[in-house]
Length: 68
Image (cartoon, rainbow, N blue to C red; front, top):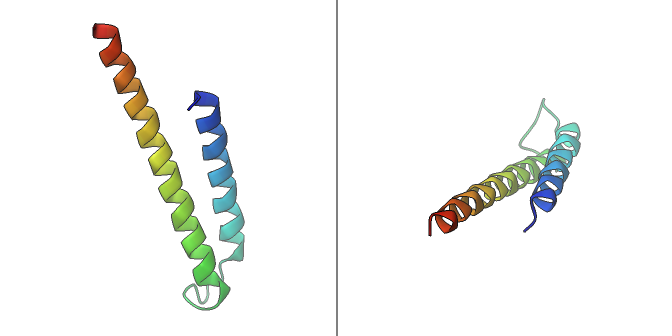
C-alpha cells in the first residue's frame, strides 16, 4: 500500500470518529443510537491502529531489505 493511501484512510477514519461523536448522547451513552455510534468510534480507532501497525511494519521491512 502506498503511504498516501494510508494517510487518506487515516483521515477518513478520523472523519468517521468526528461524525460518530456528534451522534452520541452523552446523557445516555449506552442506549439507542448512541451505542451504535460508540461502536463506530471503536471500529475507526481499531482501523487507525491497524494502519499504523502496517505502516511501521513496512518501514521495518524496508530497513531490513536495505541491509542485505
